[in-house]
Image (cartoon, rainbow, N blue to C red; front, side, top):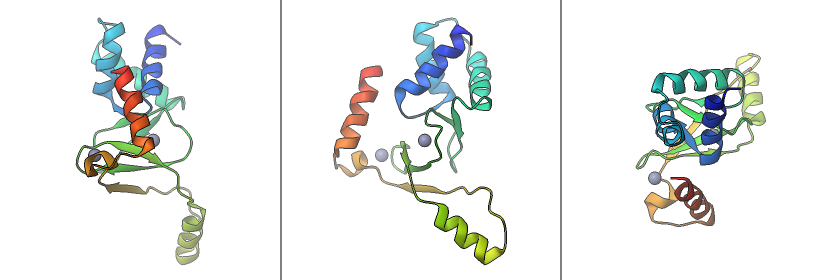
Length: 138
Ligand SMILES: [Zn+2]
Ligand SMILES: [Zn+2]
């Protein structure tokens, strides 16, 4: 793995969130000022094809990159656009769909949207922790 690619992977992992290619570029540029956006795109593409990171494409949003590669869903804030991970038990849904349609279900896409605690003015321990993480690495 090249130094560029390792740095890109580290940035995606470090933010603990879901970055767009441009956000990754802005961060990586701090340690590699000569890197181009094209190089960042190419490396993100390779990293997602090798399964090191996931591509996240939510409706009406830009492509984002996720260091959490376990199966999970996303909830997106309609106010600020923040994306959080959620784990939902999907097996029952897959079974229901299989029963109703007779299909063998191989994949499902489910996304949630709403207003995040920060935009609602409610601070929870998990958002405070996420904020601390974000602020430290800005
Ligand atoms: Zn929000
Ligand atoms: Zn995620």
